[in-house]
Length: 331
Image (spheres, rainbow, N blue to C red):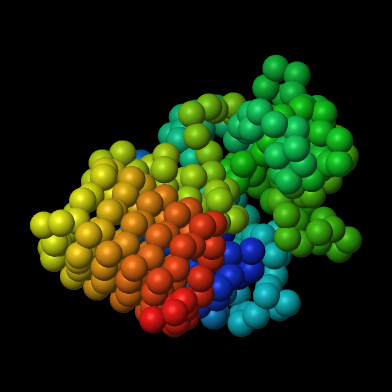
């Protein structure tokens, strides 16, 4: 079996944060999404590859070297050119050969052990499923109906979900299922594995489910990104920073090296402050602030602010600010 981590998307729903940075490398607490995935993959001792695109290749190469894994690069530079998940799986097959594959979406954070997941794999297609508990939320995902651990129905983004059990971004495909990819791609949706699973079920292939609880996040929106931070961030990690005696930190927070917390500032809870940021006379909570950003006389709540921004005299709530932005009100 080989492991394939899918990180070839352009994450347009999180633009402008992900316009120049791949989603899999966004920080969540002390590590990136990819770091969390690689820690779980590392338990398996399996040959592993990251699938990405030409535009983000340079970002992933240091991670491939760090973890000693391969890199498969599709020759695309823009969203409209991308191969899609199934197209990228086809490219991996062409380069690596037919085998059983553990396929993992590179933008997912999940609580279960991949070792436990593979113990449930018996040579039939296996998917990880999670009860999201809300029919409205279920409409956004692939909805699963089970009999025991056998999948009897799978519908991608149904308008009327039959359950709140959804497929997450972890799949074990036997070589027999991988052999069908060429046939499927002749008239199938290239992007979502859910449609491939529907197609497999439609032709009588057996699909089984591994149910898990605790947590799962598809980092596809600012809300899910911030919720993931709240779940993952259990303890504070504060590096070498400058902090005013009049400022206060409410844990848990991450404050990276070189940051300056000045004046009467309040940081936290659930705040990530990147390298060399300056926070002065400001409150920042439930937010992610990327490196080299300056925030003065402002309140930031449930917001994501990209690198090298300057925010002055503002109250930002549920906002997404792209890199190098300068926003201020008054003097």
